[in-house]
Length: 139
Image (cartoon, rainbow, N blue to C red):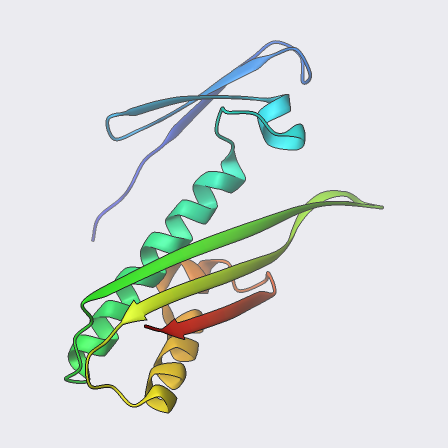
């Protein structure tokens, strides 16, 4: 099976330092502000959200196709919550929001398949220790 690789480099102190994330053809910068305060640079949690949204959309699309009701489109947004608690920072929750256009599917069947995909996609399985919510809308 495939092995995917990414490299992170950090130089300097925590608050004044800078980092670089390299994967595929991407080279993205990140820093303290982008991670904990917000800026236009990326951060690990944002990349986790992108990976989860991408995996979920593909997995739901595949499940719908296997069921004989292929989707015209599946658009998913993942929101990864970074929270500071007594023990430090943690990822406290992930909210998935998906909107799918699926001609001819029964709305109850769509909801059932969307929920099954929430726990069944590869990234969801890897992140199963984190509470997840799902809002699935049939267009």
